[in-house]
Length: 111
Image (cartoon, rainbow, N blue to C red; front, side, top):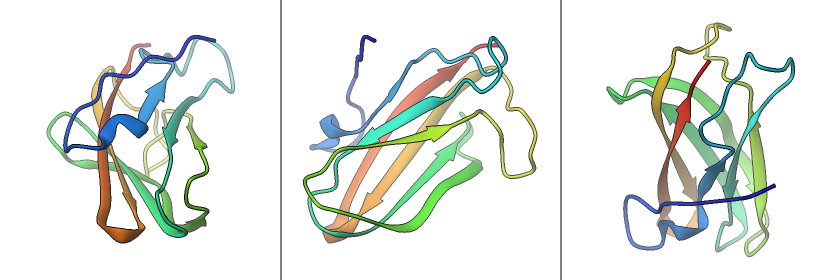
């Protein structure tokens, strides 16, 4: 598997990216995109996904404890908070980690 990342957002966002992107949730049942991140400190991490208009689509993880310095891949199946498959388009994710660490990334959904 090839991983690529184009950092966006604040300095230090190089550690958060999504793969594969573009992502097609309907090509194969059970397909997921993974939000890769590495918190600098131990503590709770929250990841939220937003649409292009910055409307909240889903809170992927909410204040889940993670170990600082370790790398994590959080899967998302392309389903929103209402249980519906999201539309094609560009989406943004925000990783909030301890110590004020905030990272943004983007992903593309193509069905």
